[in-house]
Image 1 (cartoon, rainbow, N blue to C red):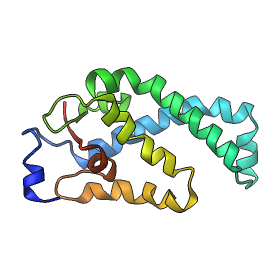
Image 2 (image 1 turned 90 degrees about the vertical axis):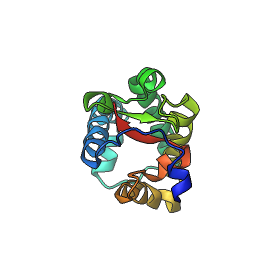
Image 3 (image 1 turned 45 degrees about the vertical axis):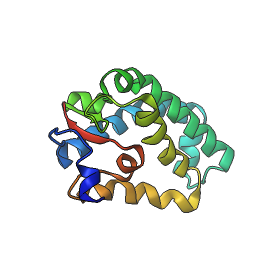
Length: 155
C-alpha cells in the first residue's frame, strides 16, 4: 500500500498485533465451543477423529452452520460497534477509512465472507494461512482488511 492510501485513514491508534491475535483466538474458542454439540450430534466429530475427510456437501453445511453461529454471536456487535466478542473484550474495533464503524457490507461481506468461501475451495485454503501474516506489515492490516478497506484500532 502506498503512502497516499494510508493517508486516507483517519488518525486513530492501531490495535496491537497481540490484541488482534488474542481477540481472534477468543472468537474462535467461543465459536468452537458452540459448534461442538453440532459436530458431536451429527457424527462429524467421530468421523474426523477417524481421519475421514468431509465431502463437499458436508463441508458446505459446516460452513453455513459456522457462518450462522458467527452472525448470531457477533452480528449485533459488528453492526453497532464494529466489534466481535473478542474485540469487545480486548477494547479494539474495526474501523472504516473515516474511523467510523464500517457498514455491514464491509465488516461481514468483505472481511469475513471471502475468507470463509476459501475454506470450501481446497486450492484457496492457503489464503487462510497467508491472510493473518499480512499483520506484520507496517500498517498492521491483514489481507481481509485490505479487501474491505478497514483497519483495526483501539476502541
